[in-house]
Length: 300
Image (cartoon, rainbow, N blue to C red; front, side, top):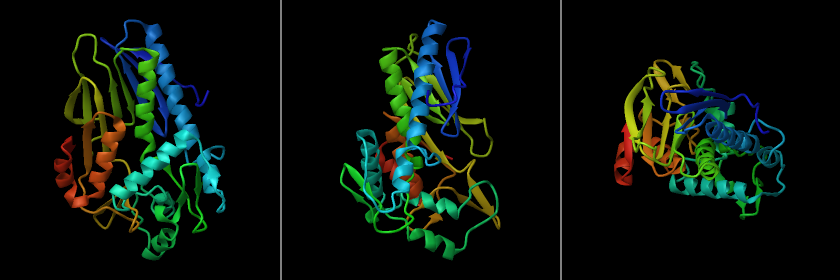
Protein backbone atom coordinates (compact mmCIF):
# COMPACT_ATOMS: atom_id res chain seq x y z
CA UNK A 1 0.00 0.00 0.00
CA UNK A 2 1.33 3.43 -0.94
CA UNK A 3 -0.64 5.50 1.53
CA UNK A 4 -2.00 5.54 5.07
CA UNK A 5 -5.07 3.59 4.03
CA UNK A 6 -7.48 5.98 5.76
CA UNK A 7 -10.47 5.82 3.43
CA UNK A 8 -14.20 6.14 4.11
CA UNK A 9 -17.25 5.23 2.03
CA UNK A 10 -20.69 6.71 2.67
CA UNK A 11 -24.03 6.61 0.89
CA UNK A 12 -25.79 9.66 -0.53
CA UNK A 13 -29.34 9.41 -1.93
CA UNK A 14 -28.24 8.63 -5.50
CA UNK A 15 -24.51 7.81 -5.29
CA UNK A 16 -21.64 6.66 -3.09
CA UNK A 17 -18.89 8.96 -1.77
CA UNK A 18 -15.39 7.75 -0.97
CA UNK A 19 -13.04 10.08 0.89
CA UNK A 20 -9.33 10.02 1.68
CA UNK A 21 -6.34 12.38 1.90
CA UNK A 22 -3.50 12.49 -0.63
CA UNK A 23 -1.06 15.11 -1.92
CA UNK A 24 -1.84 17.26 1.14
CA UNK A 25 -5.45 17.78 0.09
CA UNK A 26 -8.88 16.24 0.66
CA UNK A 27 -9.81 13.78 -2.09
CA UNK A 28 -13.16 12.26 -2.93
CA UNK A 29 -14.71 9.92 -5.45
CA UNK A 30 -18.43 10.08 -6.27
CA UNK A 31 -19.64 6.79 -7.71
CA UNK A 32 -22.90 6.09 -9.53
CA UNK A 33 -22.80 2.45 -8.46
CA UNK A 34 -25.72 0.11 -7.79
CA UNK A 35 -23.75 -1.73 -5.10
CA UNK A 36 -21.52 -0.85 -2.18
CA UNK A 37 -19.06 -3.56 -3.16
CA UNK A 38 -18.39 -2.06 -6.59
CA UNK A 39 -18.18 1.46 -5.14
CA UNK A 40 -15.59 0.24 -2.64
CA UNK A 41 -13.50 -1.36 -5.40
CA UNK A 42 -13.47 1.94 -7.34
CA UNK A 43 -12.54 4.07 -4.31
CA UNK A 44 -9.82 1.62 -3.39
CA UNK A 45 -8.22 1.71 -6.85
CA UNK A 46 -8.44 5.53 -7.03
CA UNK A 47 -6.94 6.05 -3.57
CA UNK A 48 -4.14 3.57 -4.24
CA UNK A 49 -3.37 5.39 -7.49
CA UNK A 50 -3.23 8.77 -5.72
CA UNK A 51 -0.97 7.44 -2.99
CA UNK A 52 1.31 5.77 -5.52
CA UNK A 53 1.80 8.99 -7.48
CA UNK A 54 2.31 10.99 -4.29
CA UNK A 55 4.88 8.48 -3.09
CA UNK A 56 6.73 8.56 -6.41
CA UNK A 57 6.76 12.28 -7.15
CA UNK A 58 6.50 14.12 -3.82
CA UNK A 59 9.39 16.46 -3.15
CA UNK A 60 9.02 15.78 0.59
CA UNK A 61 10.12 12.13 0.48
CA UNK A 62 13.64 10.74 0.54
CA UNK A 63 12.93 7.44 -1.21
CA UNK A 64 11.77 8.41 -4.70
CA UNK A 65 12.95 9.60 -8.11
CA UNK A 66 12.54 13.30 -7.27
CA UNK A 67 14.82 12.95 -4.26
CA UNK A 68 17.40 11.08 -6.34
CA UNK A 69 17.36 13.87 -8.94
CA UNK A 70 17.49 16.65 -6.35
CA UNK A 71 20.46 15.09 -4.52
CA UNK A 72 22.32 14.00 -7.65
CA UNK A 73 25.12 16.60 -7.33
CA UNK A 74 25.45 16.99 -11.09
CA UNK A 75 25.29 13.28 -11.96
CA UNK A 76 22.85 12.17 -14.70
CA UNK A 77 19.87 10.27 -13.27
CA UNK A 78 18.11 7.72 -15.46
CA UNK A 79 14.32 7.81 -15.25
CA UNK A 80 11.43 5.50 -16.13
CA UNK A 81 8.84 6.16 -18.84
CA UNK A 82 6.24 7.71 -16.53
CA UNK A 83 8.74 10.21 -15.13
CA UNK A 84 10.00 10.92 -18.65
CA UNK A 85 6.48 11.78 -19.81
CA UNK A 86 6.05 14.24 -16.93
CA UNK A 87 9.43 15.83 -17.67
CA UNK A 88 8.51 16.19 -21.35
CA UNK A 89 5.20 17.79 -20.41
CA UNK A 90 6.92 20.17 -17.99
CA UNK A 91 9.41 21.15 -20.71
CA UNK A 92 6.53 21.86 -23.11
CA UNK A 93 4.78 24.06 -20.52
CA UNK A 94 7.99 25.99 -19.97
CA UNK A 95 8.32 26.63 -23.69
CA UNK A 96 4.68 27.63 -24.18
CA UNK A 97 4.76 29.96 -21.15
CA UNK A 98 8.05 31.49 -22.31
CA UNK A 99 9.69 30.49 -19.05
CA UNK A 100 7.01 31.69 -16.65
CA UNK A 101 6.33 28.08 -15.66
CA UNK A 102 9.39 26.05 -14.71
CA UNK A 103 9.67 22.90 -12.57
CA UNK A 104 13.08 24.08 -11.34
CA UNK A 105 11.43 27.08 -9.62
CA UNK A 106 10.19 25.14 -6.59
CA UNK A 107 13.34 26.21 -4.75
CA UNK A 108 11.78 29.69 -4.50
CA UNK A 109 9.67 28.30 -1.63
CA UNK A 110 12.78 28.93 0.51
CA UNK A 111 12.02 32.65 0.16
CA UNK A 112 8.24 32.64 -0.15
CA UNK A 113 5.98 31.09 2.50
CA UNK A 114 2.37 31.40 1.38
CA UNK A 115 0.66 30.76 4.71
CA UNK A 116 -1.51 33.86 4.90
CA UNK A 117 1.26 35.72 6.75
CA UNK A 118 2.85 39.07 6.00
CA UNK A 119 6.47 38.27 5.10
CA UNK A 120 7.73 39.41 1.69
CA UNK A 121 11.31 38.32 0.92
CA UNK A 122 14.11 40.71 0.01
CA UNK A 123 15.07 40.97 -3.64
CA UNK A 124 18.58 39.76 -2.77
CA UNK A 125 17.16 36.51 -1.33
CA UNK A 126 15.09 35.94 -4.47
CA UNK A 127 18.04 36.71 -6.73
CA UNK A 128 20.21 34.16 -4.91
CA UNK A 129 17.61 31.46 -5.53
CA UNK A 130 17.01 32.48 -9.15
CA UNK A 131 20.57 31.38 -9.87
CA UNK A 132 19.23 27.82 -9.39
CA UNK A 133 16.12 28.31 -11.58
CA UNK A 134 15.87 27.64 -15.31
CA UNK A 135 15.00 24.59 -17.38
CA UNK A 136 17.62 25.75 -19.91
CA UNK A 137 20.24 24.89 -17.27
CA UNK A 138 19.13 21.23 -17.29
CA UNK A 139 20.34 18.46 -19.59
CA UNK A 140 17.43 16.18 -20.54
CA UNK A 141 17.62 13.55 -23.28
CA UNK A 142 14.43 11.51 -22.63
CA UNK A 143 16.36 8.88 -20.66
CA UNK A 144 18.42 10.80 -18.15
CA UNK A 145 18.14 14.15 -16.40
CA UNK A 146 21.20 16.10 -15.30
CA UNK A 147 21.00 19.17 -13.08
CA UNK A 148 24.50 20.04 -14.10
CA UNK A 149 25.05 23.76 -14.50
CA UNK A 150 24.24 25.07 -11.04
CA UNK A 151 24.77 23.48 -7.61
CA UNK A 152 21.57 23.43 -5.56
CA UNK A 153 19.16 23.01 -8.46
CA UNK A 154 15.98 21.02 -7.84
CA UNK A 155 12.86 19.91 -9.66
CA UNK A 156 9.35 19.99 -8.26
CA UNK A 157 6.32 18.42 -9.98
CA UNK A 158 3.87 20.25 -7.70
CA UNK A 159 2.57 22.46 -10.51
CA UNK A 160 1.43 19.54 -12.68
CA UNK A 161 1.27 16.48 -10.45
CA UNK A 162 -2.27 16.73 -9.10
CA UNK A 163 -3.93 17.04 -12.51
CA UNK A 164 -1.83 14.14 -13.76
CA UNK A 165 -2.93 12.08 -10.76
CA UNK A 166 -6.61 12.89 -11.42
CA UNK A 167 -6.41 11.76 -15.05
CA UNK A 168 -4.43 8.64 -14.18
CA UNK A 169 -6.88 7.69 -11.44
CA UNK A 170 -9.87 8.37 -13.72
CA UNK A 171 -8.42 6.10 -16.41
CA UNK A 172 -7.79 3.40 -13.82
CA UNK A 173 -11.34 3.71 -12.45
CA UNK A 174 -12.77 3.25 -15.94
CA UNK A 175 -10.65 0.18 -16.58
CA UNK A 176 -11.58 -1.25 -13.17
CA UNK A 177 -15.33 -0.69 -13.64
CA UNK A 178 -15.92 -0.10 -17.38
CA UNK A 179 -18.85 2.18 -18.14
CA UNK A 180 -19.45 3.14 -14.50
CA UNK A 181 -19.84 6.89 -13.93
CA UNK A 182 -17.75 8.52 -11.23
CA UNK A 183 -16.21 11.85 -10.29
CA UNK A 184 -12.56 11.92 -9.24
CA UNK A 185 -11.91 15.06 -7.19
CA UNK A 186 -8.43 15.76 -5.80
CA UNK A 187 -8.56 19.09 -3.99
CA UNK A 188 -10.83 20.74 -6.55
CA UNK A 189 -9.19 19.28 -9.67
CA UNK A 190 -11.83 17.03 -11.17
CA UNK A 191 -12.48 14.44 -13.85
CA UNK A 192 -15.87 12.93 -14.67
CA UNK A 193 -15.74 9.38 -16.03
CA UNK A 194 -18.67 8.21 -18.20
CA UNK A 195 -22.28 9.37 -18.16
CA UNK A 196 -24.56 8.52 -15.26
CA UNK A 197 -27.18 5.80 -15.57
CA UNK A 198 -30.00 8.39 -15.62
CA UNK A 199 -28.07 10.54 -18.17
CA UNK A 200 -28.14 13.48 -15.75
CA UNK A 201 -24.96 15.53 -15.29
CA UNK A 202 -22.91 15.61 -12.15
CA UNK A 203 -23.20 19.10 -10.60
CA UNK A 204 -19.77 20.48 -9.75
CA UNK A 205 -19.44 23.56 -7.54
CA UNK A 206 -16.74 26.19 -8.09
CA UNK A 207 -15.72 27.55 -4.69
CA UNK A 208 -15.66 31.23 -3.85
CA UNK A 209 -12.09 32.47 -3.26
CA UNK A 210 -13.37 34.46 -0.27
CA UNK A 211 -15.78 31.98 1.35
CA UNK A 212 -14.44 28.44 1.66
CA UNK A 213 -17.06 25.82 0.94
CA UNK A 214 -19.42 28.29 -0.74
CA UNK A 215 -19.91 27.72 -4.48
CA UNK A 216 -20.23 30.72 -6.78
CA UNK A 217 -21.03 28.62 -9.85
CA UNK A 218 -22.53 25.19 -10.42
CA UNK A 219 -21.13 23.44 -13.49
CA UNK A 220 -23.09 20.51 -14.93
CA UNK A 221 -20.71 17.88 -16.31
CA UNK A 222 -21.74 14.73 -18.13
CA UNK A 223 -18.08 13.85 -18.67
CA UNK A 224 -14.78 15.70 -18.99
CA UNK A 225 -12.78 17.66 -16.47
CA UNK A 226 -12.54 20.88 -14.47
CA UNK A 227 -9.45 22.47 -12.91
CA UNK A 228 -9.18 25.54 -10.70
CA UNK A 229 -6.22 27.72 -9.79
CA UNK A 230 -6.38 30.53 -7.26
CA UNK A 231 -5.02 32.19 -4.15
CA UNK A 232 -7.81 31.57 -1.64
CA UNK A 233 -5.67 29.37 0.62
CA UNK A 234 -2.05 30.19 -0.28
CA UNK A 235 -1.07 33.86 -0.22
CA UNK A 236 0.90 36.58 1.58
CA UNK A 237 -0.83 39.78 2.73
CA UNK A 238 1.63 42.64 3.13
CA UNK A 239 0.94 46.37 3.45
CA UNK A 240 -2.59 45.91 2.14
CA UNK A 241 -1.46 43.95 -0.90
CA UNK A 242 -2.26 40.29 -1.55
CA UNK A 243 0.55 38.23 -3.10
CA UNK A 244 -0.58 35.04 -4.88
CA UNK A 245 1.38 31.80 -4.54
CA UNK A 246 1.64 31.60 -8.34
CA UNK A 247 5.16 32.75 -9.12
CA UNK A 248 6.67 33.88 -12.40
CA UNK A 249 9.76 31.66 -12.59
CA UNK A 250 11.64 34.32 -14.55
CA UNK A 251 11.41 36.95 -11.80
CA UNK A 252 10.74 34.93 -8.63
CA UNK A 253 7.81 37.21 -7.82
CA UNK A 254 4.06 36.48 -7.77
CA UNK A 255 2.20 37.16 -10.98
CA UNK A 256 0.53 40.59 -10.84
CA UNK A 257 -3.03 41.55 -11.77
CA UNK A 258 -4.23 37.97 -12.29
CA UNK A 259 -7.78 36.96 -11.31
CA UNK A 260 -8.28 35.63 -7.78
CA UNK A 261 -9.33 32.29 -9.25
CA UNK A 262 -9.66 30.68 -12.67
CA UNK A 263 -11.58 27.51 -13.47
CA UNK A 264 -11.47 25.83 -16.88
CA UNK A 265 -13.44 22.90 -18.31
CA UNK A 266 -11.69 20.60 -20.80
CA UNK A 267 -11.58 16.98 -21.93
CA UNK A 268 -8.93 16.03 -19.36
CA UNK A 269 -7.83 17.49 -16.05
CA UNK A 270 -4.31 17.96 -17.41
CA UNK A 271 -5.66 20.04 -20.29
CA UNK A 272 -7.84 22.09 -17.94
CA UNK A 273 -4.97 22.57 -15.49
CA UNK A 274 -2.61 23.64 -18.25
CA UNK A 275 -5.03 26.35 -19.34
CA UNK A 276 -5.64 27.62 -15.79
CA UNK A 277 -1.89 27.76 -15.16
CA UNK A 278 -1.07 29.54 -18.43
CA UNK A 279 -3.96 31.95 -17.88
CA UNK A 280 -2.84 32.78 -14.33
CA UNK A 281 0.70 33.35 -15.58
CA UNK A 282 -0.73 35.79 -18.15
CA UNK A 283 -1.71 38.14 -15.31
CA UNK A 284 -3.91 40.98 -16.54
CA UNK A 285 -4.16 39.23 -19.92
CA UNK A 286 -5.67 36.07 -18.41
CA UNK A 287 -9.10 36.48 -19.94
CA UNK A 288 -7.66 37.44 -23.32
CA UNK A 289 -5.65 34.21 -23.27
CA UNK A 290 -8.68 32.12 -22.26
CA UNK A 291 -10.91 33.65 -24.94
CA UNK A 292 -8.29 32.83 -27.56
CA UNK A 293 -8.07 29.24 -26.28
CA UNK A 294 -11.77 28.63 -26.96
CA UNK A 295 -12.15 26.86 -23.63
CA UNK A 296 -15.09 27.28 -21.26
CA UNK A 297 -13.89 29.20 -18.22
CA UNK A 298 -14.96 31.03 -15.08
CA UNK A 299 -13.08 33.96 -13.51
CA UNK A 300 -13.37 35.26 -9.96
